[in-house]
Image (cartoon, rainbow, N blue to C red; front, side, top):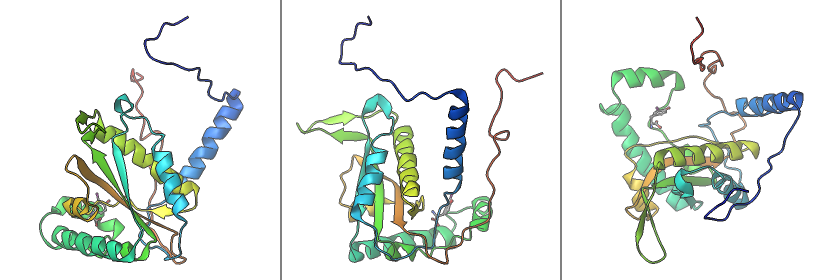
Length: 228
Ligand code: IYR
């Protein structure tokens, strides 16, 4: 028997035969491959429960020392959504019309046809802002340092995005930088940094997305050791 200094419990993840293992992988890939980032949303209401479920999915993510260094600010009222839109568009106008986006970056974005117009922030039923906690305020008032914050929060956001997709909802990984306005509007403390903003809703009936293809497994793979 292993000896532990902290509580451990048995863990028996589902096991499938090889054919079933592959089949399930293929199903999961085809599910994920149907997800697209959306910029044209319907104003149709979405139950708050769906937002809570996406956050609960994010909470299942692995994190550095299991410190779960994230907080999700949920915004559903029209006035706050509008304040976020106005502030985001103000920053994005500087990005697009000023020189904060250098030419090379601008060229990379061109196929997406993104602009400073963020009207979807008024349209969607929900906006969720993920904050990364560099440290976490403990009940005794002390600050606990967190580890691998970016990695942890990035993975949690991936789970969040996948959960929305599973519910038939759409989102956009939106970063209207600099995002300090989100700290103020969401009234978050200084140990939290705005990480990503997610508009959430159903895709508009006439939604379009840029044509794109995804990297093949060969393009995304290198063999180690490299074959001769
Ligand atoms: N944050 C800006 C610019 C932007 C940057 C990247 I990288 C994108 O993939 C898309 C947009 C905006 O949201 O418009």
